[in-house]
Image (cartoon, rainbow over all chains, first blue to last red; front, side, top):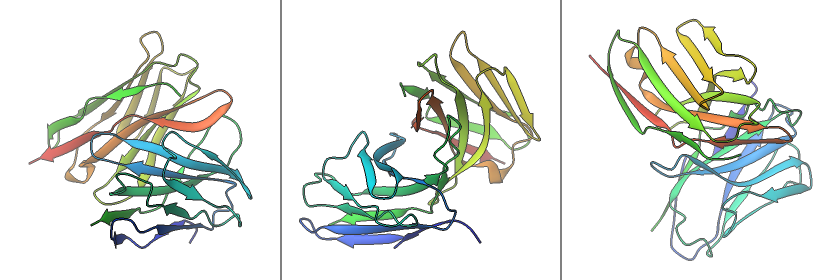
Length: 114
Length: 111
């Protein structure tokens, strides 16, 4: 089955610790994305990558970092610099061609910082 | 993308039609999408419409696009309890394949 997996589903961390969220896809998509979802605010783009070894900041990149060493993987690190990291994080991927952009989403990771 | 706005809540009786509305500000939008998110899950694409179309129908779903007013709507006929979810509209614009999402409309279906 093709799809996107995110792990873990729930994650708890103490304030001041860095934490890395995993995202893997086997859809052979070039583009991958990280979104943050907070109640009533929709999805906000954190980082995106159109191709291996390249990525760009989205609208709310401060306090986050990413890498794209493999086509299949796009891990997100939430650093201690992120002031309010508790949220639901969604990873997505798509074929990066043209204006039509159907994004396929993973099941999400709910991060709670204590 | 520019701002995409949606009302936050909609309550509908089972069997009735639901209409979810969305407005966008970027007149150059090429594609507009409707995504569905069930509780605690990721988003799934429900349907989309290209900007040169006024209407698209897919089984129980009807999408209407009014480009003059920059207004998009999703009608769900014969709404069922399984339709309870958050619905997001989103847009892409030429030369920018990123999606701009609205805040989402939470649809609650009551018996």
